[in-house]
Length: 363
Ligand SMILES: N[C@@H](CCC(=O)N[C@@H](CS)C(=O)NCC(=O)O)C(=O)O
Ligand SMILES: [Fe+2]
Image (cartoon, rainbow, N blue to C red; front, side):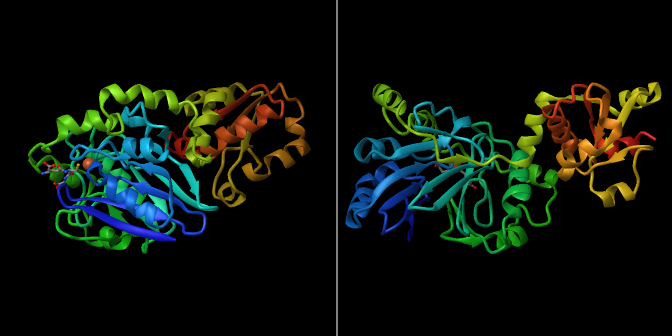
């Protein structure tokens, strides 16, 4: 594989090339419009085919080369679906995976904060953080839907949970740093190491940075993948033919949210009332050890992992029209279990929102 970190000294922007000499597939992250000829020469030199250009966000300080590269090389442009870049071929969603070079994967991770649609890209042991996390700093968040709290969460709950030795490649550096690691940023980044969410928000509120010089020109241009307004239609028309990335990974939380759309939840006080009225079977879908540490009286222990297999052996659940209240620790697993039970023909299943934790708090 080839990996190159390229630098635009005018805007202090990093662009990354990832390519494979066997399959000839190439991907550029955050290409800059003043370097198009260099990129093309570099690709041609190795006989590479540019498959994707991926944007970490709609940039405010420079114009992307993505639309022009698409015109000249047929590459597909990818930008977060939250950026309003309607002409991009691929409207990237959190968890999208771009496959190239026969098995290489680049995964998009939503890291909002610098802008609403900011993404990081994870490839092997490297994460391209755009302007969400910079080396010893972070991107500002005072325009384009920026949000300091969201940025703190994206970094501390997202990027900082990557393995310590993951290499951090930022979207800019203003002090000639090139690369860092997750551990280095987690432990030494002055805006984040040991800082609470409130402290971070406070730091960001007081940066008082001047507006980027090109913002008024760059943001609308980048929403058109760097093309002029009258070129826009071409891109939209040909976008029809463009494929989505090979697959989309959905998170456990997405699964729970999806399940909640299809089931009925009740809160703890409604659940208690139903139990008092009687004629409802309570199922605890937590693990056996959790059940052993405390549970609702008379609840049937059927861990969610074995639900489909054990449910048929329970005489209390023989009548599928009878009311069932399912609970877990916080309401996620029980939502999934309630959905499974519905699929198995139970038509009167309720999931207890907040789970046993909420139940205990209410006592
Ligand atoms: N002087 C630069 C400012 C660029 C700028 O504001 N960059 C953004 C990223 S798009 C940022 O977050 N900078 C962080 C900082 O300057 O600390 C310009 O006018 O373009
Ligand atoms: Fe930026």
